[in-house]
View (tube, rainbow, N blue to C red):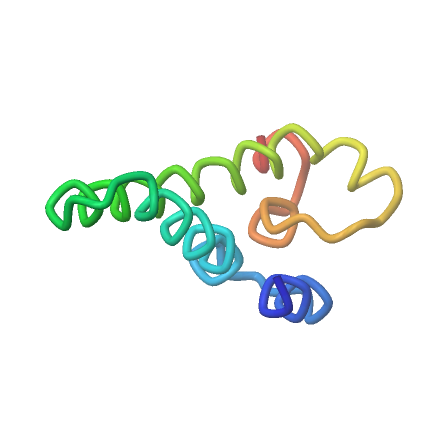
Length: 86
């Protein structure tokens, strides 16, 4: 979470970098669902991509409010306007 905070406070413009901390957290959590090594590895990959999706879905959902309140949102950093960001 410290890495996520740091990237956001630096106004990170890279979608991949901005998603990474959430993806890693979700990856680790998902890998612990099963004690079977093979399943754990598959769940780790699933968790990673789920984390990226969750981060971007949240950014999409919050874009209008973030623009209104001048809050960090990676989609607004990557695109010049709200329509393109969404």
